[in-house]
Length: 292
Ligand code: KIV
Image 1 (cartoon, rainbow, N blue to C red):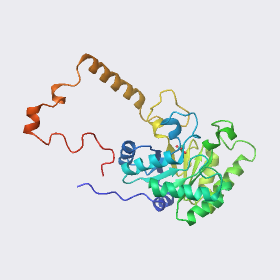
Image 2 (cartoon, helix red, strand yellow):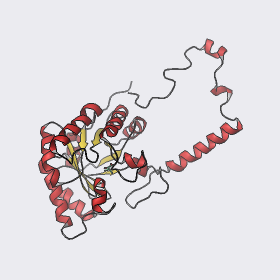
Image 3 (tube, protein in one colour):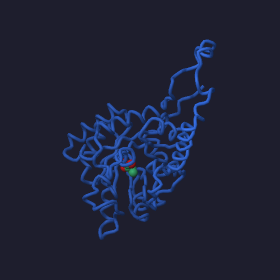
Image 4 (tube, rainbow, N blue to C red):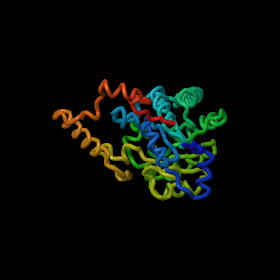
């Protein structure tokens, strides 16, 4: 019998930092991937607005809507049994006002079913974080390269190297912790700055392109699985080359269909066989990702 694993909570993550256990976080956008990443031991699954780039094919994360994030959260929550599921607040879902941010974060929790939300930016969002936490919504912060500010930053660039950059990053991270964030993502910043922030904060830091000194790491799952053979920034380690594996499998399938090698008789149904074994097609005709 399958037992339900204990869900990772924001308290588990805090304890992991205290015990010096590193946190493994990945992005997920659908139930099948969520199940696989969860079963393989990922502690946190982020339904990131990176879905705008890797799923929807946009050049930036800016076009992603709140409804789209909520839709993908619902799928991921169905697939994940143990991992903590974080819903990313998309561009312009919290920047206009605190009320807008509270109402939209509430929507992701209520309609999506995620366990916490993430938002980009530092001290300027401290009051929003305070109000969200006061309303019972756990918040993960995100400083450094904040892709929603792509145009403001002038591209996807390493942050914190300019004069005063180190101090600004530290102040932002501290402001988020003081406001109540349970964790802070540090994206694309020099490793020594990330290490210093990690040593200063009591909440866990999760790095992406931020070196070895963070309490945990996050990667976009499509990147670490090598789905796009043309995309390999320095901070990504490829643990598989699924893009090539998928293309090899599909070209094999296409060849088999063309030659008639697929399907075989064993992969077909006959009237006689169905009578003998009436339950042959069960329980569902297709596999279901969120088998609980
Ligand atoms: O949207 C996303 O995937 C993210 C991670 C890269 C941290 O924000």
